[in-house]
Amino acid sequence: MLSFPNAKINIGLNIVEKRPDGFHNIESVFYPVNWCDALEIIPAEGLRFESSGLPIPGDQSNNLCLKAWHLLSSNQPVLAGKAAAFHLHKVIPMGAGLGGGSADGAFALKILNEIFSLGLSTAGLQHFARQLGSDCAFFIENRPVYCFHKGDEFEEFSLNLKGKYIVVVNPAIHISTAEAYSGVIPQKPGVSLKEALMQPISTWEGLIKNDFEKKLSEKYPAIADTKKTLYQQGALYASMTGSGSTVYGIFETEKDLKAQFPNYAVWQGFLD
Image (cartoon, rainbow, N blue to C red; front, side, top):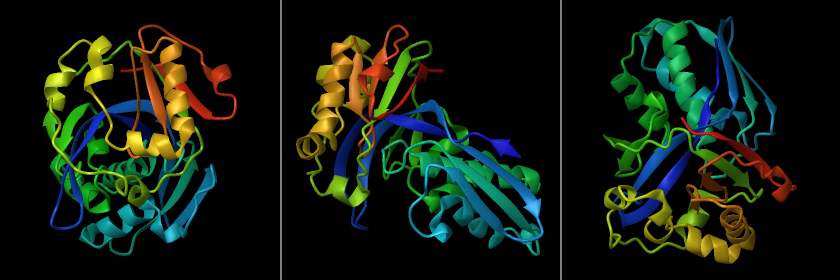
């Protein structure tokens, strides 16, 4: 079975407080974007994993697709004695704040649930996804949500950007989560994110921020320069997403900005 795990952006990202377990509580809105990997999984005689496209660093056993298999196979008796072959074609940049690896893991859970007829509900899939990573559970339903706690708890939130055009720019800077958090002092925002997002998008620049962005932009000027260029090209709102380094701009109408960023990975398209 073939599927296309997609990226997501953060619209606002507030680091609210540090938790006793060492993680941080955040608030953000996750919004899906159609920049996609391709993932195929089929039943097989033995467990296999292959990849193409962008090279995936690190040990193959740490890939979230395989972790999804091991998580399910250790909890679902029906998988005893069975195996699967995975092929992941990697397109979404890694360490980019786009959630591509999390999407791969979550989509793997959904495919395995279907091809092996596990009968897991949405809540059941989310339960396993949370064990893979903080934002993996978002990709089970894969629709805009307000998220809180570690980024793995969601609330319905009415934010419709359908028809707006987005340009997503990755300046090829790999930022680890640990590096991103090292420059952040947790604090509650003066204006709640929910309240700010109810305002016209033209006002978001002064109201909605990503707490990772300031320090990382100082360390990596390409982030700030990319954001500046997006605004110069007419973006209604621009921001770094996640823990960086990807920056996006939301536009009223279609734009082709690939020529503005010749050395970066760029995806552009309409939002759903």
